[in-house]
Length: 442
Image (tube, rainbow, N blue to C red; front, side, top):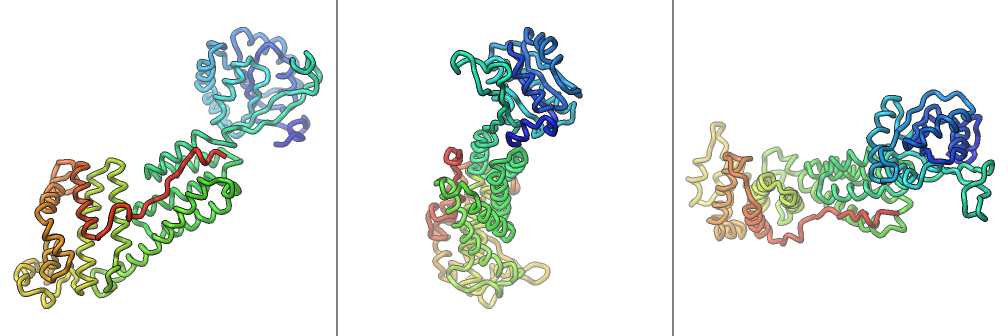
């Protein structure tokens, strides 16, 4: 709504106007007759209710559909005023069936405390603000607006422009990998904003992408990340915001890594349980395994150590499976006994199931690698006692066969072993970018 709309009393019909009532009725009357709202919510003290009856209502120049009064319990307390408004206004709007975005707030006519309380209370409603200024004031321009010289002004909602609490909350959720909650907040916030709507729409797409990635939906995550990249690049604020630029750089690095993960996973999906589709090279499955360890780390960082260790166990299995397949052509879910060293054949053959397939688990896979002279198998043999104890505690966990929760120490020990098997440091795992909300307040 521009200034012409605000001043056009013939066509400007707003759904609801919330305004404070102090001791000066003139600006209140100007605001009402200019905006012509269907309904009004007056915010008044016990004393100023009289102003509504005697001075405001008799001078409303059109038929008003309805009104309500929020009577402040202590008009000199900012906290009490904000609390009273927040306690009563949502119920009034709900009773009338009015959405937040259909509300105007005029904070001209109340006392200083009332005006401050109205702005504070309604900022997060996403309302539009108006203020009655003027072309002439008393006291040589320093006093109040002279009667008959009033001019209605439209002011931007600071929440709509800045959304500081929502930005801070969004950043906290992203950095904590609470992507579904972030998506919900971003969608709701974008619906209530105008100026920063594109930013929160972008943020919702970012949240969807990383949530898909966290759930191992790699192709869909890649598609959403590319969409998020496009939305980020289209933001006008990008050029002047180092925080957004850093976030975009991290997101682009993630896209490149995610493409590697997809290439890694595809042969396994195509192989359908056979080692024939797994590439026979040293890097086979490496990106996928790194991502699985990173996923486990994110679970541990959020305190979900049982989930984290379950992912680590899966990673440990896949590390052995990948090495057997890529380096030795052996599928541990359907072992060809002819490829097994003589010293291991009897033990391996004991794992043949009813359908004739030989399936071996984690420990036998690593022992087979050791018998084949593979460095990974030798690394396992050096730490087999420690790993066996950790796996026993994992088997007693809530997500396996027991009732004992896994703790952070168990997770870290198991993670250290997994990293050593891959020959990497924890800093080499893929990382999601961090979000700095302070740098996003533009």
